[in-house]
Image 1: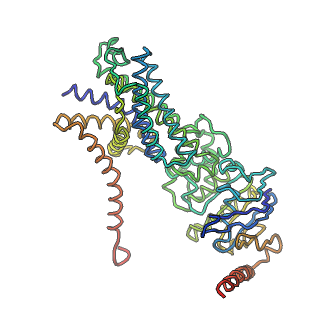
Image 2: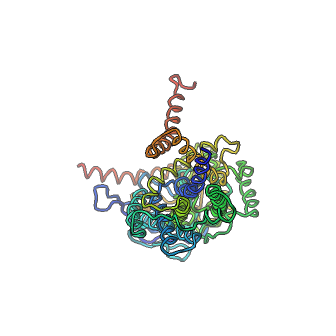
Image 3: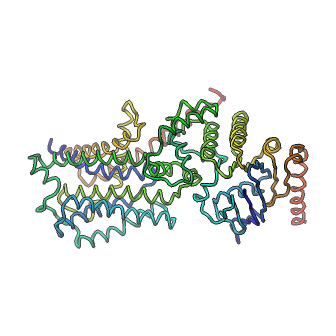
Length: 305
Length: 264
């Protein structure tokens, strides 16, 4: 039982890095970027092939996962900004294309990494920590470093331009920034994180599968929503940017904990995607219904109440 | 400073919705000119401002600004020369960003943006001073999200943002039309103050004939995508509402006559 929860936290931290990527597109740019399903698997598949077939250092495998993710985001970005394809459709096109590309990269549907050393087993051997604890340690360090990096980046002049683009495109153009560049950059940074997360997950679960990214976007959205709901109960109410990034990672951990609990309760793992979809649908629709209800309630027949 | 020569723009050409918005505009502004633009709905006032700002490409003609031909530059590239305030107070600012972040973002208009930190301490002090000049109490709220401000406050902030880095030309597109009369008066007062202090070359579209006469050193009236009346200096200061109404009716009368011919 405890082992299952340790495993869930470990998975949650690694997937949390993908959630940071989804946060950039979904919350900062207001785009639901479906590239994620493909770029997550792309990062994992690339990393697995490099380690198993080319004997590459697992840390370099992570770097490769990040780089191919950036490229995948770039493809979606170009389709969206240069050719004006709606963001959702551009993401779907890249995602579908990546399915074939991932199969080409691996040459088969999945690659096991059972016999190869990875960054988690290396640390486990060096320190005597269990695989789960080693994963949590490395995952937390990487996630913390990325949160710090993103906090810095979105505070710079270029990062501010990205945030402003998601806020008000008219203003951004009027103040001299090409929104095609900012959107392209945001999609590349976002999918870079997603690819890195895919590479980490592939090393931790010791296999890469062409379908490992399926539904990743829903996991990402659910984690963001859970993180926000939890964060609002805190005194700071997620006003600072860094707290929102941390909430995204924490949301991912909680998501995987919930998953572990419902699986322990005997839920079919295949039903988890339905549950995730319902969580996201509820989280997006409740505020809308609530404000509509408030508006109706505010009506009074006799004028000023 | 600004020279428009034969600027034409037709929307939806070749369709039933074809609309000649600018039918050959020639206009020259001297440095420091403050020009008010009036005209009926669909006269082409906003289209003229948007064609200068590069919101859409023009069909023909040239736009020179400070000696540079900007006719074919994309909107974001022209931004280095232009300060803009829109009619909708929501369009000029980023609601989820802080007041100081909005100002810092605007202060970098037309400059290359790098990985330097987006706002410096010295800037914050400067913004506190500038905001105090607005007299709206915003100087103590630098870290507030702009979404918390009223429409009038946002419009005043947009005005400050547009002029923080001196623009070669300030474009005001009915920037007080969405505000209540009292707030509108305040924003206009700030406009006069800022334009006067910096001696900015300004084009201001307005629906309010009183404001159009009172403000600026020159007034132009547009109708059917053309400039039909252009008055400046002494002559402008002697203008009355009635004169402008007569001009309006003269222009509208032609349209009515055209309609009668069509129906007749």
